[in-house]
Amino acid sequence: MGILYSEPICQAAYQNDFGQVWRWVKEDSSYANVQDGFNGDTPLICACRRGHVRIVSFLLRRNANVNLKNQKERTCLHYAVKKKFTFIDYLLIILLMPVLLIGYFLMVSKTKQNEALVRMLLDAGVEVNATDCYGCTALHYACEMKNQSLIPLLLEARADPTIKNKHGESSLDIARRLKFSQIELMLRKAL
Image 1 (cartoon, rainbow, N blue to C red):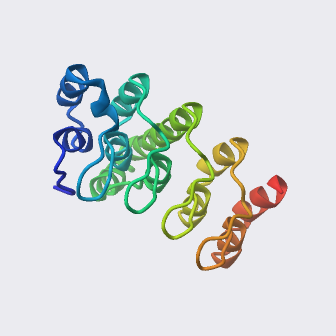
Image 2 (image 1 turned 120 degrees about the horizontal axis):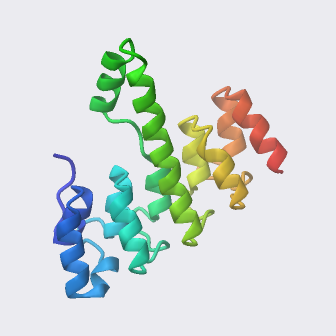
C-alpha cells in the first residue's frame, strides 16, 4: 500500500484519487498546502512521490506552494527527481519487451511522464537548489540515479553542480565516483 497519511488530502494525492483531492481543495483552497502531521508531506509532495501528473498539475493550478518542505527538508522536486520505476513497471517492461517493443514504449512513456512532472515543477518556480536534511539537491539525486534526461532540465533551470551535501560530495563528485562519464561531462559543461 505504501505510506499512510493522517491528512486525507495527502492520502488521496498519494493514491491518485483525483476526485477526493478536487473535493478537498474545492471545500477549502488552503488544503492544497496542508502538511501531514507525521512527516510534513504536502499533497503536492505526495503526488510527486508517485508521479501523479494530473494531480500535480491540478494542485499547481490551485497555487500549491512548490517550495514547502517536509520534515526531511525535501521539496516536491526532490521526490519528482527520485521517482523510479515500480516493480510492476519493470515486470511489464520485461514481459512486454519482446512483443512489438511494447515494453520499450512503456518505459519511454514513464520516462517522459517523469520529465513532464519535473518540468511542471520547474515552471512553477520550485527552488532548484533546495537542499534536504542530507544537504542533497535534486541534482544530487538525479546524478545518483543516472537520470540523463532530467539532468539537462535541472541544469537549464540553474541547478548548481558544485553544491556539496553533508558528505562533502557535489553532484559532479557523485557522477565521478559512480563512473557516469556522460553525466560528468554534462556537469562540467555547466560549470
